[in-house]
Image 1: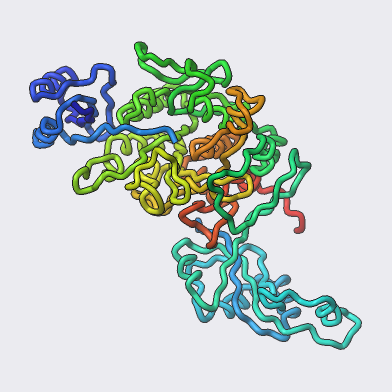
Image 2 (image 1 turned 120 degrees about the vertical axis):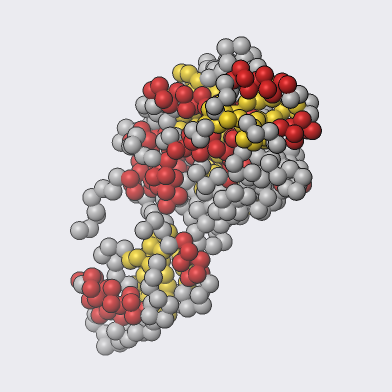
Length: 74
Length: 460
């Protein structure tokens, strides 16, 4: 499974977002904090297959699904 | 007008050039009139002349210096020989970047750099004179230099002699961790259960190198350690930037951040449209923008995938001009740093613009290849074959200059700091102004400090 950053609507609690993500087949990364944004969203790190990540993009309470890609020191 | 300081050379054959210059120096209206006359063919929109400027006549052709004695009689007051007819006039001006591009393509105008000149004090070192047009340093690289050479090149004494060495400034190092025994780590962030806590990394870590390199120009600054490259993903960086915001909300620190990391290949946009490199609205980039908007300048390394001698980590999809500066490192809001050596030669692996988000990247260049953390007698030790390198090293050198400037003026906003460092950078490279190899030029602490604190004029 790959790591993804899923941004969700701020009106949903963290616990509810975690529950819904798990139900959809994505595993929230409990070692990563939920990151707030000013514009009514929060980012949650999850582990999921590419197909699950793609299906999350169509869910109404999900604002966006983004890769959590590996970086390198320069 | 936030523009570029240049000298415009325009053709103007005038027999009375000495009188013209005399008149222009005593009357600003006359100077303006002359300038308008010279520019009548190309228009003056987007060109602003310096206060108290006077057009300067030039007599000899660009590539033909006057022969011995040729001008001696002509400029002697005791001969009847008339002064020579001018060939061109030079106009010092500030031009908008749009106009600069246009002027450089105009046949009747030559655009020259008008770089800030610093009064030189005693130097610590002997500096090898560089070719101002810049060259490329590629494998085998030129030998690394001592810290004192960099300090002289940066002109840090201008700040240090006024008491500004980065004190009261905290620099956040987002990297793989810093050794708190070797460097002044006073805080940072890691989850309580994280394997690596602030200050606990080894002295040979990449983060410790960055810490050492901040100290080049700002030895009294202190550091926050944000060790995220143990989980080298954008989500890890996202966590750390949020920690920066949280701390900022508590006590206004850190004052700036250093970011010497990024991606080393460009995935296909059709297959990966949401990848960090292609989507400017990726959460990491949005968070970086928030951090800058909160008043924290963010320095990012350009990358090590320049076309001449790219790092072995680089994928062919991300090597060379236009494809090697990307993701957060190419955001308009950040300060993106390329690498040059002490001879002002671009180091061949330094990534090249245009940037993939903001086109005009890198913003500036700074120095790499020196004995900072690594090398004989340095904290991490080693031989002369071991030295601080990469745009990773160049970036904290620039961040250290910023820290020293901010200790002189803590009210500098990120935008003001960026403009200051860009506008006072030493222009190198084949064209006047920005170029994709060096950005606007090489950072210079003395020039920036002088621009920030203009002293009394030598001649009033």
